[in-house]
Image (cartoon, rainbow, N blue to C red):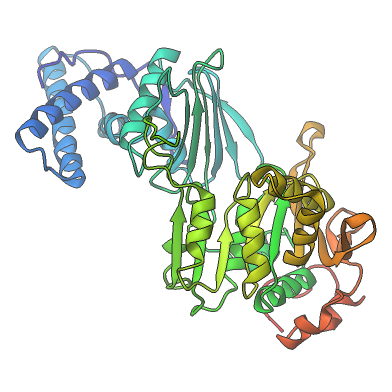
Length: 473
């Protein structure tokens, strides 16, 4: 590297460190210059060896970065200046590597197991959401909005499963990162670039774990476990970031190991295929956005929609279809799968209540198929869906409290009722604190008993948190 590396190390920003270590200040101008030199050297090497693997590129980059840091130390020693400590050298090298192969200054937060969400409202307005409910404003992640956009463009081109673009012509970006996190960004249509990263901290989770997390009580855990065994079609509802995907993952992890399952998602978030010990026979479908070019039919070239994947799953010999989230046209084919299949499919849906979920699903069915009438939509939803599990978020941080997420209601669908709307039974309803407690026996109680469910779990006397973890009946 030929870049002059005499810039001071300290004073421009900090990198998060473990709790028992002091933050290390970093000169991000130095990091940027080292990154530019590394990127240039890598580009030259790729011209000579265009088939160089990503792993080989990374190893070469680490060597180039370390060479640059070593040259910095030599220059400072010759000039009689203070040299960086070994800890500072490691921070510089990690920051340069993250700029080339990771998320730049955001990388330490993505690597932090306690971080749940990252929000960026311009380069200098950055908020980190932690698992304990804290939202903390942190240092800028770039030197300007223009640099932030360049970073996002670099991320889009290099880090997704397929190359994406973020330009004036394509100002919206949604992609999955290597660790399974979901990144969404927007430019041009907002005054400043915005970025959100949703992380999936807990992956290998089951219903016992959800009891331990105080998201559900033991009676509800036993009921939902029986629902999975009885092949009930389940819709998990709630607001954004309520924990719907986590609940769906917990339900899926109650499936028999030999179950042949298809997961269908716009971006991989369930990640069941990354748990081969639990799910060795999963077919993980992920939609594809396609290129910027459009074919004669007006569709993007290479595009594969959720609707097409739902239909494809029907010929893959799977016994269940689990759709990560229903948002649009895919609602109708999913309802058809639930109606015609063996049962046991599931999905998540944004809805403000369990009752509202039925209205929303019917509307999505009608929006996706012009020929579907309201009567047809409601009748199909009523016959296809067995249970709606609603998750409530209570945020009391503004009054000095905490944020809680828990199941508040479980509805059983019982066909069409008065007025052409689905008839429902409140099997679990909100208790005094809002958490779901047994309310009525399900109409199909015999189905649950058949797979081993003890009806006494729905009777008074099974106290809250009784046998919180383990001890399945």
